[in-house]
Length: 289
Ligand SMILES: Nc1ncnc2c1ncn2[C@@H]1O[C@H](COP(=O)(O)OP(=O)(O)OP(=O)(O)O)[C@@H](O)[C@H]1O
Ligand SMILES: [Mg+2]
Image 1: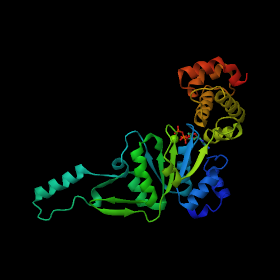
Image 2: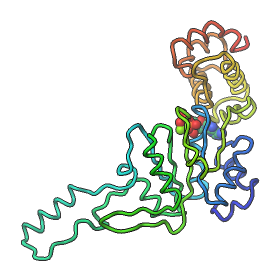
Image 3: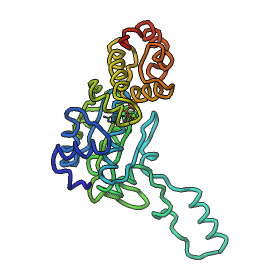
Image 4: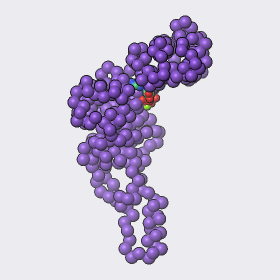
């Protein structure tokens, strides 16, 4: 499927589902509009609700290269754009020295440049899906730099000149909301909040990701996960945990989520001591036994 084939919301929905991604209400429309308007899609939502996966599935669907920039505390524009390959430059200079070449080759040419994700995405243009993952982990300064880049898809490398994208890549930005992103950046993006799936969609997500899981087991796990989310845990389980939980139950040779099996496998779902105490105390209700 090409970008030009995604001519309606229904087509986007069909394409995502065809690649085993089950979009929530409104996500297919958001993807469609972001693609049509060539603007970044900003996805927020709790852990494990499928933010990163959406970008991966979109790249797969479009047959595009996925270029991922994983953000972290302290990331700077150099690490995100390009770096000069110093060892290679040094080797070239040594070689010139040794051969006594009288023409000095320019070691600030394109072949000595190490592309980092943003430069790569700029060069690939619309044949790439650029995933800027977990932008909330980066600091304000990096966000400001990114805002500028996303505005005109142009960068200037002092030794080489200006590089512009012929057509902007498809851009997906994710945030876990450990901090609020700036309004200026948000203004450039189409925003979509991915909520936890309802039990019905969660069952389908489990079965698409783990086809070996029976329908009744997937239903039992989805229902238990929904109840766990209602307990007031500090860290609620997402669909990713629902998938792992189902798999671990099946690996124990069980096809039912009994209280005993839930107890044995709870470490796939609840990953914090206080939450574990709370979940254990209510396990009977949670599995609905
Ligand atoms: N809507 C969905 N359709 C199909 N699979 C899904 C869906 N949502 C989540 N998943 C499954 O859950 C896994 C985790 O999703 P993903 O890594 O995209 O979550 P995330 O929102 O990026 O979480 P985090 O904030 O922790 O990075 C995916 O690899 C995928 O297998
Ligand atoms: Mg993610």
